[in-house]
Length: 367
Ligand code: THG
Image 1: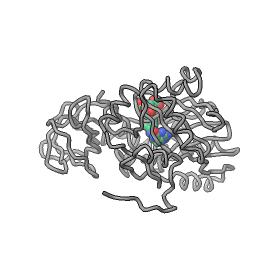
Image 2: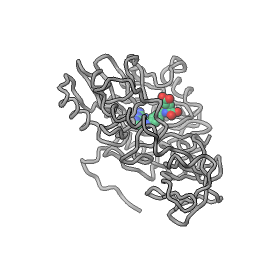
Image 3: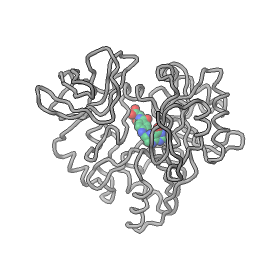
Image 4: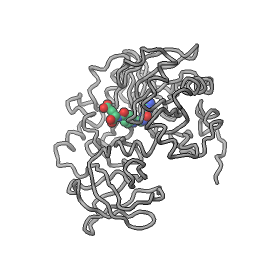
């Protein structure tokens, strides 16, 4: 159908060759890289994640490293979440905001030491942002992109697979905690994290020349458990209410609108970017909130590119920001970013690419 034109502008993942060898049949663009989005058997790939274990290339979640005397100060300035209790080996889900309180990225922050942090970023150019802020604030910190690429192992059997590689200590690793270690002599950091609610780990490869080697080690260790290739799974993440920044957010979305309130601490210092705007937004009545929509009808819709307008009694109330056929709910489902007047249980009409569809609003997560 299409081919991808090679260019040095679009960096290859260290796992690219391995994923092509596995039969990757579709890719998306993310952080100026390519990410595999499927291997030709979407339903099989979904059930493997739900029932066994899946592995996928998330090198596109690029790392931004903050290193130096003021690394902790810069991390806090960028994140409107209180980081004072964050210790080395902790990961934290954070909402980076701009000065207006709009979310500009939703990374996982990893603290390696008092003077070294990584931001494991979603799809926007935080390297530029963090460097500019550090310079403008006169901070003693180097902002770089290290050679670090996450590989996800997700699913109910992922503990067994990862324990077979690293040892049984991984079974007691707490959610979002990580440890620097090795696989043979391949340097990695192992974290209990990942963009699914099936449980699992992310292996942060710290030598980009060894992607195929690491992929094959995980593939072999996982073989007895039925491992196979997958991708950040749209169906599973929508069923479980995980946010996709840039997909489910627009240029005005603040954390309160998309269920990220628990990652915002309004009492962080005034020099934290966006905190003053966030306090004001919180003090006023919110305008939008994020709910689920379950569409009527028993056939999968063809996924579209754009948000789909939602109306209630003829009045536009917001948008459906994604839509997927849920294999477990046997319905088309998605997120709704809608006026706070709209409530769970309300009947709505969604302007789908093919034809208007009726549906019902519901709370998130679906499952
Ligand atoms: N892996 C890595 N980095 C990433 C992502 C990833 N950076 C960008 C993006 N994905 C981050 N997005 C999320 C969103 C949700 C979660 C993790 C990453 C998540 N949320 C849990 C929840 O919502 O239930 C729990 C969060 C909590 O309570 O602290 O896990 O995929 N490396």
